[in-house]
Amino acid sequence: MKASSYQNKFKIMTVHLENVNQQKNHFTLIIFLFVILASLILPVDPHIKLFPCLFKSVFHIPCPGCGMTRAFILLGHFRFQEALAININSIFAYIILLAITINEMAGLAIGRKIKPQLSGRLIVLIFALSFCVMMAGWHCNLINEGFIK
Image 1 (cartoon, rainbow, N blue to C red):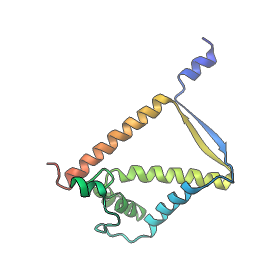
Image 2: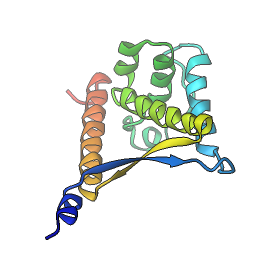
Image 3: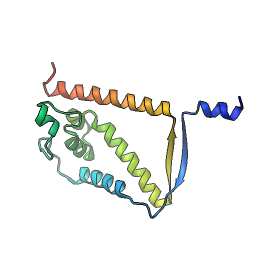
Image 4: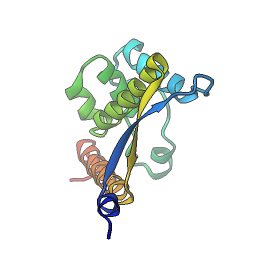
């Protein structure tokens, strides 16, 4: 076995700086910027109901994403404890949204952005951990709202 193939076999992640095509459709960046700006601009009212939840209306229990909109607005106003009380998963989603947005904006500004290439095992691990965190957060939300004792 060659040394280079041995090293590639155990590589978990590589990070590349990718040249950005300026003609590329930036629809995702526009949506993410809209969400971030909305979280900063919309007034803080933890009792406001912006969008009805189809899952909750059918099953009569909150879904894992229930309260995420209100939590994002609270996070935009730096009210972390209140946001976590509404939906514990909101902080993780907001951080990911901010990281992707900053990376995309850097790509526009300097013409290069970070592009990680993950191994299959790392992708499965990230997916499994994310799923566990989401389910634990959902469980906490159900306890907070009194659906589970």
